[in-house]
Length: 302
Ligand code: NAP
Image 1 (cartoon, rainbow, N blue to C red):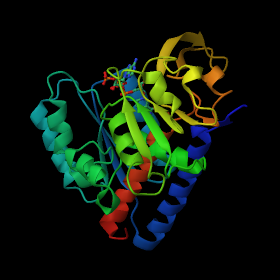
Image 2 (tube, rainbow, N blue to C red; image 1 turned 90 degrees about the vertical axis):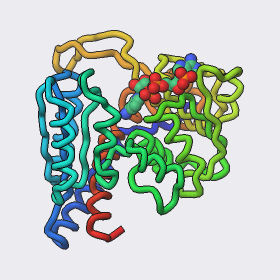
Image 3 (cartoon, protein in one colour; image 1 turned 60 degrees about the vertical axis):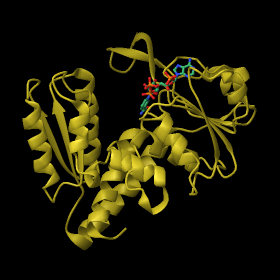
Image 4 (spheres, rainbow, N blue to C red; image 1 turned 120 degrees about the vertical axis):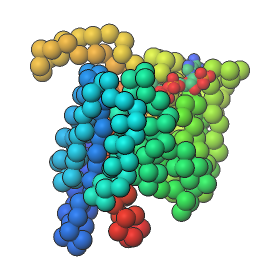
């Protein structure tokens, strides 16, 4: 069997079109557009290219987009004051502080200073708590897990009653997606197992999974024999395993590999996400969706 490919690049385009048309509609009706500010401290090249992509996407959607670049040596207090300024700016619906921050700044303190109602990344403890409660309490699900769930739903995979196994328990992927999949909600109602480095028999757990979500950061960790025939496999891992010259640009680019042995796994799974082009494109997409959602909360229409 050859698995159906769940392509994040295609799902991203569908969702961005939906967001763009909703932005237009709301602009005509209410005269405002979603406002997103990205605060970038220093000049970390990876952060800069990620932020550039965010700006490009927000601009394409017709958002008000502010990129606020600050010097590497900004004082923590000044950064906190800047966040406070955007917390009190009614035209801003989403505040994003690009990580990592320089060592002299307490990351936790900075993230906790963001108004939870503008925390479109969904990392503020209040939003983590809301996610755990589930249902109407949820404001913003963190972007990568939200993207994973959206892909599962749009691929038409049955989640209700499904055995979901999540490999990894990080705060940004493993824990939140596990929490989301067992909630009493659409695209959820699953029975969830979380496995990690202390799990005794990783393979045995993975083999039971109707939906296997892998976020370990270990290239090729999941072997084909661990996959239940017909399962949905979501590979979150993005691992740089080398470099090559791009045929398009002639420049050096990273060779990326997921946490799953893709070529063998696609012969066993029912559906599978590729790396790259799978979960990756969904994160920024869901950030935009959260920013639009934030504006809708502000307008009192959800
Ligand atoms: P992380 O914070 O390093 O967490 C990795 C988790 O995997 C940990 O819970 C760890 O267990 C577990 N793990 C590691 N090796 C394992 C093994 N051999 N067996 C079982 N469990 C193992 O990583 P993360 O931030 O969640 O990211 C995971 C991967 O997803 C990375 O490749 C990252 O680049 C990728 N990612 C992609 C996106 C995206 O596409 N948009 C977003 C975020 C992350 P312990 O807790 O026991 O140490």
